[in-house]
Length: 288
Length: 261
Image 1 (cartoon, chains in turn brown, cyan):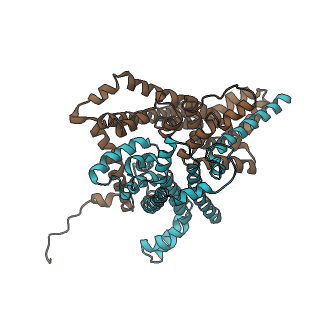
Image 2 (tube, chains in turn brown, orange; image 1 turned 90 degrees about the horizontal axis):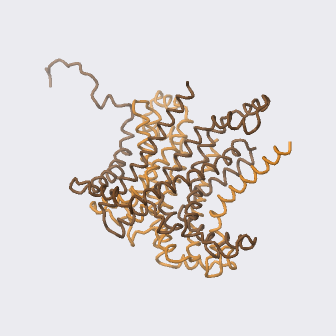
Image 3 (tube, chains in turn red, cyan; image 1 turned 60 degrees about the vertical axis):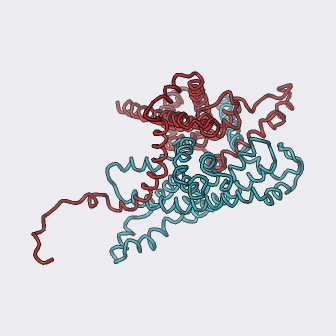
């Protein structure tokens, strides 16, 4: 190559325009495309056999499916409400505790976080069965005359799910609450506001972003719960994840199971989108 | 004021009750596993190691423990390699759509695991990965990458970027700089990411249910099958082993982080 045409000045190629070090991102992205996005996309394909939407038509017309979807929503809403209500004082205590109390509360929160959800559901069965500790204590105190039926009920499912989801609600609440300046509460009390009034008008508005983050996280995670309702609930109050598993492992109706899975994915995405919208509205109100 | 005091007492009573609610159902597995009786009740009947003996001599449980260790370790290695590389890039560069890329990489955390499980089931059957260790490792790695990413990104934020520049200025190649400067600084984050990746796989049951077969089934699958048929103290013994391994990992990663400060 001696005499070639003069070098044509050219702009950066596509590769050169990529941010520096992009090659480092490629393996993770490719891996997720292959083993995560592709399976989810296949699920959408399987839910539409021959391009027909009959599986979705079935889900949204048969009462049996609509009931399961409604039940999933109802349980998730109850679990979200209970979890956030219990998490709020816990996070408040963490945000305002001394060093040692904070350490204890953190450990109590993180131990369950790192113990398998399956094992915790298993413990709940042992605790809640007719001869379990909860019934023994209630019988011993004379509060009940015969053992309460607690497993295979919705109470059992809600207890088990709140137990799993509490850390997911406490952590975002705590990260917001530890930044709240408690002198504002003192100021409101010096100005003559009652504790309750100060809490409602001063503290709560500042903690609201944490409450919303906790609520959305617990709600969306609750929508997809499988293990806990399968072990602690009755088949009558089935949640959508159980129905998906049933279609794949018992009914062997993959198309319908895939459609139910896509519905669950859609509901989860919708809940997150609503949360994003809520945050924008909240930020706008704060700016106004 | 009296009402003030009452409110404080009630408040702390509620918080302590919540802490007990968190701890009791998590920890009762351990005393139950040492039961001498053959019924699964709390408090346990007597003390013995018979259920540990039973579990550790049962070929099915031993095979499952082997599978769990193999899949968990491979997941930890693979997820930390992929996650650390991605975290290095995300930490160094700023570009449009970065939040989107990060959100995508973290999204397996919030995708309903049953959805991912049945999706993998469909695809793996076609790829010949159904019932294989490779399939299980791949699926668990997807679930574990977010944990590595969060952990390594947190460590990287503590590292002074000028150190890498200084190393480059002294003529070191990028690989050398990574190996001798950056990696030692972020090692606690990488290790705790690997530990969390291992625990993610070690405890995972829903995806494994759809991907593993009787030859590759892991400990959580065995527990799941067991719990649905009968309550057996052997299950508590296995559970206690699972908890002990997880606890070891968590303590290891926290110790590393503390010594790093």
